[in-house]
View 1: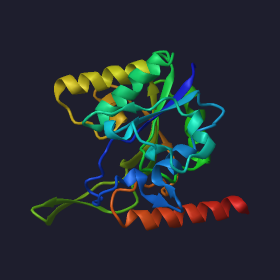
View 2: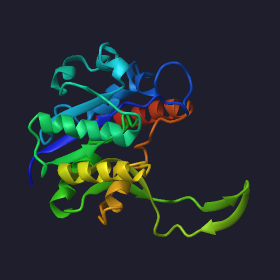
View 3: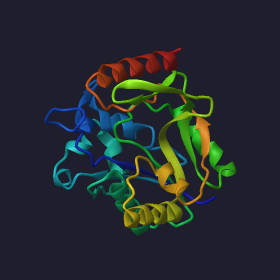
Length: 239
C-alpha cells in the first residue's frame, strides 16, 4: 500500500475568527491550537512523516514550535503555503516528493484548526485505506434539519438522509491528489476540501464515520467549545 504521510496546511489568516493572531496559534489549554492538531500525527507508528505548511512570514520565527516540545523535531522542515488552501496543500505535496515520498504513497490532509481529532478515529481511517482505492475521509451523517434559503427566508427543507458532514483527515494517493489540485487550479475551481477536487476527477471516496467532536475552530465561540471537548476526551481516556 505504500507509506502514509500527513500534510497539515496552516497558511490561513483566520479572517472569520477576527483578531490579530491567526487562529492556529491561539492558546487552548495552554498550547496552541496547531500543537493539538499535530499531536495525533507526530510519532504515530504508521505515519512516515508530517509536513507542515505555513504562511511564509512564519517560517523565520518559532511560533509554530510552541507547545510541541520534543515533538517539533519529528516534523519535516515546514514549507511556505500559497494564497488558497489548495495551493498550500499542493506545495505540501511537492515538499513530500522532495523528501522521497512516492506518487503511490498515501497522504492524509488535516486542518490545522481541528485540534480535537481522536486517535481512534485516525486509526479507523488508516485501517480503511486497504479497502478504499479511491480515497477516504472522516465524516458524519447530518442530524439537523436543513433549510435552503432565499433572501433570508426559508425556500425549502433539504432531504438529509444522504448528506454527510465532511471532516479531516482526508486520505488520497499523493500523485492523484497533486494532479487533481493542479487541474482545479487550471480550471479556476475553488476547492473547500481535497475530496471535492477528487470528485471532479470522477473519484468516489469512502466515507468513514468519525465523531462529531472533531470540530474546526472557525469562530470565537468555537475555542471554548474545543476546550470543553478536549477535557471530556481526557476524562474518557483516564477511565
